[in-house]
Structures are given as structure tokens and as C-alpha cells.
Length: 422
Ligand code: EPZ
Image (cartoon, rainbow, N blue to C red; front, top):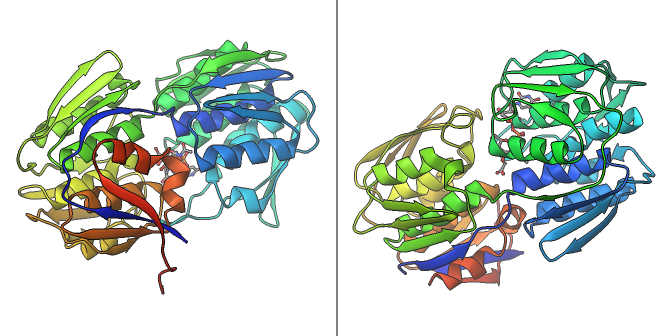
């Protein structure tokens, strides 16, 4: 099994090019199912999750070519409308094919995604939305079985904000008859990018980026070419690498406007942060100061940067409190950070971190994409050697992470590790 080994203590400095946003690329790839012809998507990150989505689309009959960081997809002739369990269990985002298949072909059979490291990941809001658009949806032997001769526009008030459910319903509504009004919609930049892609393909959408999105159904979408937005979570992760090692990092090809609250938190912890165009420069001198973090829907602090900021707090001066409000228990990284010597206590969805002057390198195990990056951040600053196992998690969400960190001066390499006896 592959792992990553880090010799801690290096100060990181230099420029890092940010890849395309994973959480925009995946729904946009699924949206290609709505289009009876070629779709080109640029600035697609080279990630396992993108390959998994491409595998699923090809299984459905989409012609797909992956050229460097662009994708050419053609959903002209599909052969299936079923997303099987062995693919969906690998990547929850596979559920994004539900809306497009239902809207264009009137039927879809999509496996329920199951859970993940930090608990159940329900899709009840996706299912409720499809029913409100007029679909008949049943759960049969672990699959969502949906049918609809013609989807009809409807008012869809979400009782809680969901990125995935907003994207799925928005995609389905593009071909529904009449007006759909999504209320309490997700405002994440990845949903805005999905809407921009759909509009480029002929959809009629307004209000994306706000809590109320209106979609006027059309008869068909048409081929288009689209350039994906940069990844705000990858950006925050590399800035955190500069912050935790007392270094100087310049992220290029990114969008500072997509992570304003995160940049404010870096400044609160003592970092100097400057933005210019598509570049963000972070300089950290001396020890970080602790700060509190409460995750929230966009434009609040992103839950996908919670683990990385917990790593920063592990070596910051003072006590920082993290309140995770999006997921019931997204703290699987806590016991692994504790193996590095971190002092963290958890009560419910609140973690209190008492910063230490130093961490000690240790073998640790990653449990999900963002927990993996938090453990790597810890390893960058720990004394001695840190080995992170089950590193396939990080390959799902970070393109060439050890190459990018090595280029910034980290002593990091991929190794073979025995599967932990747990
Ligand atoms: C997206 O997941 C992201 N994934 C996640 O990033 C991210 O953590 C999450 O949004 C929140 O920002 C992708 O975009 C591929 P949600 P999603 O629906 O759509 C509950 C990463 O590391 N909920 O906004 O699944 C849900 O359990 C990943 O890149 C329901 O109850 O998230 C959670 O508590 C991890 N019923 C909350 O809503 C539903 O039908 C937010 O989930 C759907 C969600």
C-alpha cells in the first residue's frame, strides 16, 4: 500500500500553480449527460475522482477523452442509465448523474452512496427534489430508481443547504417544463461554476450564487466549451503549508475572491497575506497565533479546510476552538494528529486545540481527502519522520501533492507501507 514519508522541519517557499476545482469539475462532467453532442472542459484537475467520474460516464456510453488538463465528452448516444454500486461507493459525487439522466432520458438507476469516514452521507434532499419535479422515485435493493416522462418545474424549498442536492436539482430543472425555483440553495462557487457551464450550453438560469435560483426549462441544451474555476480548497491547503512552516508561498492561477474568510483567518493567526489578480502571497514569520474556526456554508468558513486549520492550531500559540457545523463528526483526523503529539479535546462537534511548540514525527493513517492533507501539514512541521498511510485518499482530491510540495522545499516522497494493523 502506498504512503507518503515526510522529514519535517523544512521552511517552504516558492510558487505553486493551483489546479482546477475538483468539486466543480465533477458536477460539470455529470452535466455533460444533458448535452446530445460534444462538451469540452478546460482546467480539469488530474485526480482519481475525475478518473472515476470519467469511468462512470463511459459506462453510461459517453465518449470521453482526457487530454492533459482538458476533457472532451460526447453524450450523443448513451447505452445505460445505471450508476452501479462499485463505482458510486468509491465516490459519492457519482450521485450527480441522477438529475441529468432523469431529465434527458426519463429514467435513472443510481446506487445509494453509503457512508464515509465521518458518518452517513444521506441523499434524501436529492430524492425529495426529484420527486418535487414530478419524478417517481423508489429505493430498491440499495438503488435509487427514478422515472419521469417529463419533469415539470416546481418550487423547491430545501430545509437545509446542500451543495450536491442544489446541483442535482438545478441540472434536472434545465430540461423540465416551466419554471423551477430553488429556495435555500447552496451558494458555493462550485455551484455558480456549474450554473455558468449550463448557461453556456443554453440553459436559462438566474440567481446562482444566491439562496434563490430560478431555472426556466428549455427543450434541449447544445454543445459548449467551458473553463473550470480554480480549486479554493487546494489554495487554502498550500497557503496553510506556508503558514505552518513559517515560510513564504505564492499561489498562482487561483481566485482570492473565493476564499476571503479563509484569508482573514490566516491574517488573524499572524500571517501576512497579499492578493494581486490570480495570485495570493502568504508570508509567516515566527509562531502562529491561535484563532477560532466555525465552519459554515459559503461564504462562511469551508468545512473542507477545517482539518487543515486544526493542524495549524496544533502548533499555534494559545488555544483554538473549532466548531464543525456541517457534518456531525468530521474529526477523524483528531486521533491521528494526537499521534504527532497534538493536544486536542473533542466534545460533540467542538474540538479544542492547545497549541504545542513542536510536534513529533510518527506513523499516521489518513481517513479521507482533507484529513490526509492535515496529517501532511503536521508532518511538514513535526520533528523527525512522519509516514502517512492509505494515501489513496489524498490522490482523490490533490493533484501531484508531493511534487508540488517538493518544489516548495519539502522533504517528501511516496513509499510502500504495510497496511496498518487496525
Ligand atoms: C460537497 O459534498 C463537497 N463534495 C464536499 O467536499 C463538501 O464537504 C460539502 O459539499 C460541503 O461543502 C463535492 O462537491 C463532490 P452537502 P455534498 O450536500 O454535496 C447533509 C471534499 O473533501 N445532506 O452540501 O455531499 C450532509 O450530510 C468533499 O472535497 C443531507 O442531510 O455536501 C451534510 O451534513 C468532502 N441530505 C450537509 O447536508 C442530503 O440529501 C451538507 O452536505 C444531502 C446532504
